Amino acid sequence: MPIHVLPPQVVSRISAGEVVERPASVAKELVENAIDAGATEVRVEIRQGGRRLIRVTDNGCGIPQAEAALAFSRHATSKLRSEDDLARITTLGFRGEALASISAVSQVTMTSRTEGEPTGTMLRLAGGNTIQHEPHGGTVGTVITVENLFYNTPARLKFLRSETTESSRIVELVSAYALAYPELSFHLTDNGRLVLQTSGNGRLYDVLIKVLDPQMGLQLLGLRVPDLESDLNAAPVSGQQPPRITVTGYVSVPALHRATRSYQMFFVNRRWIQDRSLGFALEEAYRTLLPMGRHPVAVLSIAMSPADVDVNVHPTKREIRFQDPRQVFSAVQRAVRHTIIGQAPVPPAVTEPMAVAPSEWARQAQLPLQRDWRTSAGRGQIALEAQRTADAVLSASVPMVERLPMLRVLGQVRQAYIIAEGPDGLYLIDQHAAHERVLFDQLQAEQSAMMASSQTLLEPLPLEFSPQQRALLESVLAPLASLGFDVAPFGGNTFLVRSIPAALNPEQVRAVIAELIEAAKDGIEASSPQSVLAVIACHSAVRSGQTLTLDEARQLVQHLEKTTSPSTCPHGRPTMIHLSSLQLERSFGRR
Ligand code: ADP
Ligand code: MG
Image 1: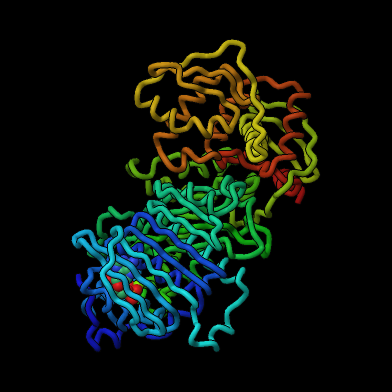
Image 2: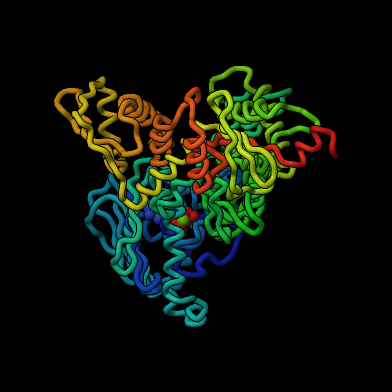
């Protein structure tokens, strides 16, 4: 719709107030406008923490020549018409205030052109007054340059923090939008230095590892959505419309935590928002899994009907109100809990009352992870049971076991489990899972030190693939190389493998590469470095059914003790079961 000034009754319904508090608020409004304009590329340039200059360039729809001046008037917007529209806002902007407010306290230059018009507009304003307005050529899209912010309101200048602080807020803001819109390419420079650049390939994980440090990226889990009630396709129950909420994103494994909540970001319908209760819901899901006073890392994106969330609460649009907050919090908690549950600490064997056998516990606790939630029928019953059991066991009283105590290996059971004694009872260790963890950590350390150790095969191994597999394999060659693989095209659909990671059993090369190709097909999560490492670790680890000498078992346990997260394998399954001294005594009626 064309830009128009909102009628007074709509204006009166819009949460009023100042939006331009600091350079980051200017950047926020300009970036939001670029996204609303349908841009696929958004470039942000700042100088001196944004005080001197903030420029946002986009390749969006542009502003028609005839509407350019109007865009800078109060309450002028193309995104909203009536009061009713306020109840279902699908754009980031809707107040028609930003350009007016920004131009009142700075010197603004705008150039813009739409696709349908041969020439565009150049408009310059200072302190809200137009000082130049003329036709302008240029490409389709909009460039808005805001210079000398607060030059005419010195009092507000005083409230600004140091250049570093102000610029870090802008970096955080652009990072947030890059995470919310992985399909858009963002480019940010600070005093001419490139700070962030995303490809716009649509993969959240790729943005995450640019925004966080890569090491942290390796310890994030893609959310698995247990969408039961929140299933978008669920049939309405007894006339009541089911809540339509989906939660996606990444959360940290319990072993990764931070002293502050600054590594948590929440998006609702792709709007970056602040909401303490969402943070609370997130942290509830980690209850008993994190040390006191520590906080998980999370990027959570909640999608719901625009009618179920009020974004017209605060002028900066960062606060929102849910129609049914409890539904949202429980959806968040469930999704997060469901994802990290396999990453729980050593599960205690439940002996009193013997509700479920330890093995049964482990089996049940895994159910939600192994089932395909989207397709399997009758999933609700079993999954809920498993979830409840696992939840009950976890929230019972499990202290976080970050380090394993010294263990004395006693022997092997069923060629699958190592039995060991610790200061507080007995441990039953799954030899395959434990070895997977050891190899995974080793590979990860090598990879992050960029020192992947590889072994050259005695004879190069030719592998033949289908054309589709070939394309997929080509897409993962770079990450493979960083892991110590030398795999190169060898004509047609054949590839020649010359070297492989030192940790990998040469007999498993074909199987590992086949699995990585499968993973690449599944996209985002599967092609993360973490899952590639997990595949290699899994194929190289000792199997169950293999006899271990006492020495071998001891060595394995010693290596396991040194890993980052000895109680879970890279897939999140437990590596061991602990039967405490107390549990033993109780079982024998001594207590
Ligand atoms: P709002 O975003 O709330 O509508 P703004 O003051 O931010 O209010 O912008 C006013 C109008 O100017 C928008 O509704 C839109 O039509 C137009 N506009 C602003 N920035 C851009 C842009 N980068 N590309 C295209 N149109 C824009
Ligand atoms: Mg706007």
